[in-house]
Every structure is written in structure tokens, then in C-alpha cells.
Amino acid sequence: MQPGMMQKADKGEAMKKILFVCTGNTCRSPMAEGIFNHICRNENLPFTAESAGICTLTGLPVSENSVCALEEVGIDISKVTATSIEDINFDDYALVAVMTEEHKMILCSYGVPAEKIYVLAEETGGISDPYGGSQGIYRKCREEIEEAVKILTERLREEI
Image 1 (cartoon, rainbow, N blue to C red):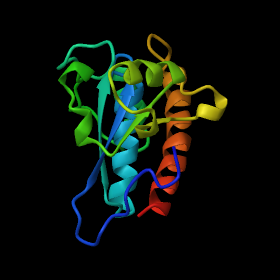
Image 2 (cartoon, rainbow, N blue to C red; image 1 turned 90 degrees about the vertical axis):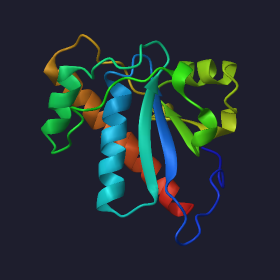
Image 3 (cartoon, helix red, strand yellow; image 1 turned 90 degrees about the horizontal axis):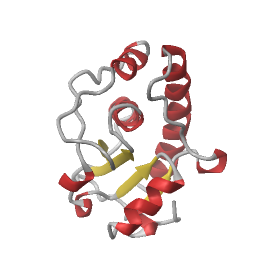
Image 4 (cartoon, rainbow, N blue to C red; image 1 turned 120 degrees about the horizontal axis):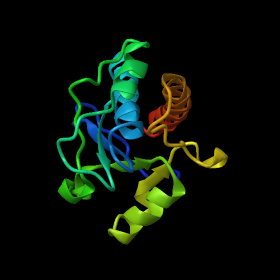
């Protein structure tokens, strides 16, 4: 994320929206959305998150393994459903956080400015897709997302 990318929030300003994006919006980005919103609620940060997928259909359910992985840490995403990026207005979001560099390139091809896109865990190659894996793989993915989202929220906190 570029320093100073987000404008400083004024007291009483509306919540800034963050969009998490992955491929199918049934595993990684819904987990990131849930973790991010949980942190922001608990720490009273002026952000809220939603999620979407590059290759999905709006309305698909989140994977059961993702729901279970977050239930284990007290976060409920059972009512979250997939949203296609085709149904997203990127102007509504202060930042778009993606799982891989490939996701960033795809969003740039949709006209999203590169400086508005943040790659989670970029220094380690992003967040791997757990789709089709065991519950243990989903737990590992959740832990990677938790760590990456904590880093993101710290960077966002510095800019408010």
C-alpha cells in the first residue's frame, strides 16, 4: 500500500469501506472480510469490509470449511454470500485488498488504479487458495489471513 493512500478520516466521518477480493469469493475473501470486520468492531476503527470474487456468481454460499474455520475463533460468516466483481462499483471503496499479485493484475485490467490495490502477504507470495482442501488447510489459511489482516489494519490505523 502506498503511504498516504487513504485520506485522513475526520472526526465523525462515515466508515471507510474496504473490499477484499479473491477468485471465487467463497473461501479467502469472506474469511478476510469477517476477520477484518471483527478487528475493526473490537478496536473501534472507522472501517468496514465487504468481499467479492473475480470468477464467481453473486449469491453462492461461502464454503462450509471457511465458515467452520472462523467459527473456531468466534467469527460468524455463515450469512455471507459471494458477490461477483461484475456487480461491484470500485469507486465505493477506499481500498481493495487482494489475495495474490494475479488478482491485482486482473483488477487493474478492470480499471482499478494500482495504487488503490493492496496485496495481502505480498512479501510471501500472497494467500494460497484452500479450495477443496482439508479443514486443517482452511485453518492454516485463516491463520495466514489473520496475520495479513492485522498488518493491514495497523497500516490503516497509522493513516487515520
